[in-house]
Image 1: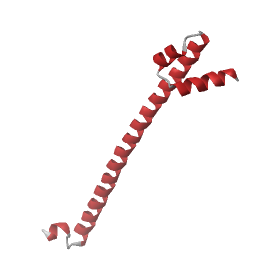
Image 2: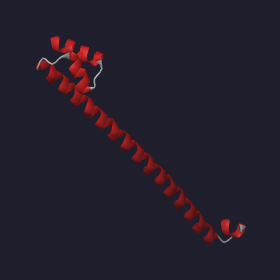
Image 3: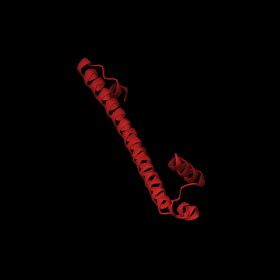
Image 4: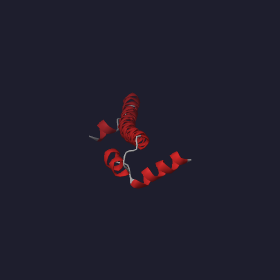
Length: 93
């Protein structure tokens, strides 16, 4: 078995070394690819979340312009009372 893992002939040793090096590269490539996929998925989810937040703030602004009650705005948009108060304050300036 040892001869298979560590060949004595120079040419076989070179081929074995090249093979093991290629396997290492492929393994690293697969790990990197999996990592990249996780990063992309996380970025996609964060982008969706940010888009939903911007839409909620846009709707809040529109509802404030229409004179909707604050409780209704909070209920329909899902923003926090603190976010609503900040938006009202920012609009006043």
